[in-house]
Image (cartoon, rainbow, N blue to C red):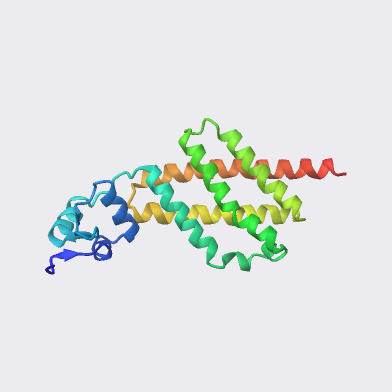
Length: 206
């Protein structure tokens, strides 16, 4: 191949986005791409430069595609050892730690269901996730402060991933703001459910 051909990572560098975003745009037919006989993506430099010039304005990206990228980013963040620095996490045995590492997944899937239903079942979803966090904290002898800290850890990882993925995808500011607003509303409802459930479980055991 001549020098006019670019790899996926080369195209990402020119466009100033993450390689996963270039892959996403290619899969959706947004970005002009070619495939080698071996199935590898290749890009013509002149096409990429022309595309970049004509697409300087952010364009809305399908939410379902972004959600899949967010969950990948959340997994990376949780697996990077950040949990080890958390005081509440240090109080847990290995079984409890495994359960809490799964917490990010339940929070994310709850958010996905909430977004997919356009908020119609928000109360049910929020209650279910809040109940899960509260009952798990009680089961592993965490007080309500640690229960909240655990939830906030996973919520913050989700929000950070959301901003990273939406930023890498060059999504419009209004699309990012709308998603952040939904996430904020949903996770606030979860926090209320968590505290109410924890209090109910405490009262039931007195």
